Amino acid sequence: MKDRITLKISGIDAQSFLQGQLSNDITAIGENEWQLQNRFNPNYNL
Image (cartoon, rainbow, N blue to C red):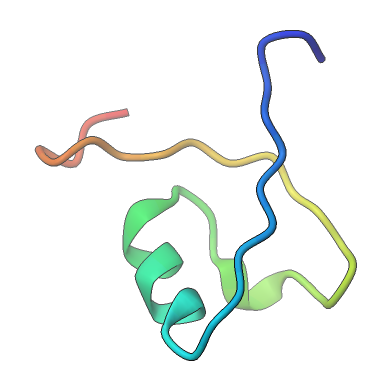
């Protein structure tokens, strides 16, 4: 996918931070799994 990026996020607050930033429920993603996401801008628009 040429217009996509892959991120590896870690840390104590990673899950709660990403849950507020991304369009999907990240708690449904298992370890070593991936999922396409959209990131919201500060106005909660895609």
